[in-house]
Image (cartoon, rainbow, N blue to C red; front, side, top):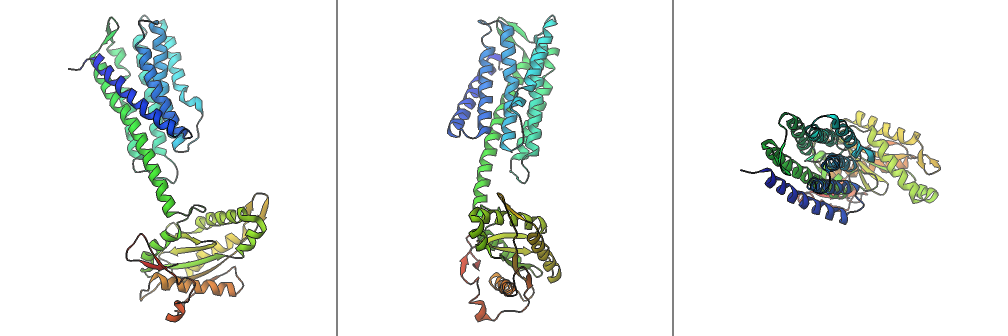
Length: 408
């Protein structure tokens, strides 16, 4: 049967291992504040444990205050680590506000005949509050981001908070007895083991989320255009291949008019700002199921599932109008932007994505020839020899599909 001393020894060893791992991670990534918060939390845990073992050399009350405040502040630092990780607003003092309240409560308990049970209970209660707030932050996460283990981590922290809350009244109901400086308590033995497991899980979940975020970033780099955040050419063609086989999908190719003139007049930053603001405005107006990607330079592709020619043209005209009537802002410059667009709606018999995009590209050239700033619906099929010389004729092997050979 385990005794308290053995359990506390296990706690010390595991907490020291966590401290070493967290400190190494901090040293290797000093610019990442979330890791810094978690490393500080590990240090607070170890230092608090050391303080609790110095009661023979320093008055017990002093060690009780220091150890208790550090223990509660540790959970506050863990919470701030998640706020930093998810980009949620915070203030540094939030790591210590609950700990300060606990410290005040411990001081008020000095008027009791035996303040120790209240002090211990307040430490557990303060930790439970911080952990519950951390679970809430985990559940909220970062808007637009879904990490596979995010909700699992929130559940782990919620259970950690619940365990601390359940343990909080035990020191009052069943006061800890001491033989010399050794605590004697059956509930303390089992609760310490339980909290040790949760403490280890808490740090492991932080590491898992960091790894998942890193994997998500790598995926975004492979699939997204770094400037606009839209899917890149490769991913657009991959996803559009499937949509092109479905009748009633509008496929549009559009180009920003006189874009070289914008770069020449306002510099490359002006051009980048124009691309980003165009992508943001168009995304806002497109249906949720639309596929919107940057094909290269100032050329973009759009797929609109389940649309007929009237509705597709209406959507694209709304985008064109919004873009042409809102200023592009780049530093102190203000200028307007227009686009030309060719669109085709898929129908039976099925054709390849190459053929549909060649038709849309022909519509784009007609829009340019008619004076730009317009959407042209292309309904006539191209002869085979014309499709071979269209703008999108160069074959591209889609790396994500062994079967798809698409034209750029």
